[in-house]
Image (cartoon, rainbow, N blue to C red):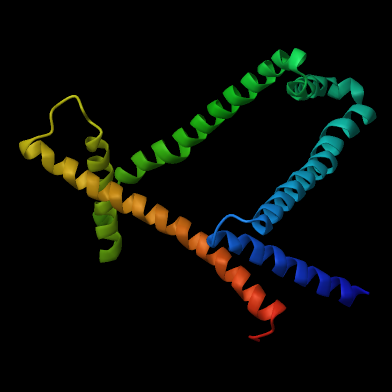
Length: 212
């Protein structure tokens, strides 16, 4: 029975994989069916995950076991219920308050983390002596980091017209920015390529048994 279920799972996986790949030719019913099943399964999975791994242990269990010390949890519970009011047109206005709190809090936390991890770390990385390293590679890398940071920031300095000598660091900043954007794009493409390789490996190895 277990072997039969495994075989059925492999064939279903192959079917949905090929259905998604069929979009490369054109939009078709096979792709739409696979897409809708994937979205539905993902939504159902995260709903069950949220209930059993977040709400029950972090809300209901604490309220039922020690309500006196955890009554404050009624506030996020009420905000969560208000968020669900978006499904009812006459009560939709209630969802604006938890939405505003969530967006504002998330933006503030993200801004603080970005300030600490990116802004301050970037400044600290440029305030070092590059010649303290013994390796020529580390020395050159530190110098490039300092030059790239300063020239990249200068590129966004628009209070003075960048011409003549002042145009040089701006051009250097453009090159560093383009290299950075290109590396980020390449990393994203490689991540997608790794997913493609994983699916092709599944089709050739587990489904068709063409490779071992």
